[in-house]
Image (cartoon, rainbow, N blue to C red):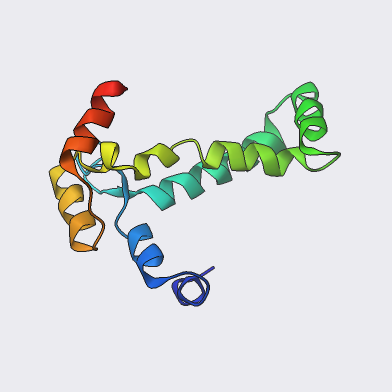
Length: 123
């Protein structure tokens, strides 16, 4: 789905958020900031490769059964791996890197700093 299709399906603020929510800071990603959505999609794609080439047959069978039948486990596995870092879309994470937090703020997404700090302390 390209950006134009996203705009046709979702509210503009949702698409804009996907363009700024970061998964890894520039310093932790080898000099280039990694968007959260790119990270989640990359992880889901790697999960599909793991399923196809490395996952044990017994594991595949178990996941197929859990997912509702043959051929459904791959989709479940890919989805589970893909959503593993959704928590990074929260203020607790987005506030951790100043440059990323500023970009998120410029997009119109905001948070109450006291709540974000409290959330970080409770983890």
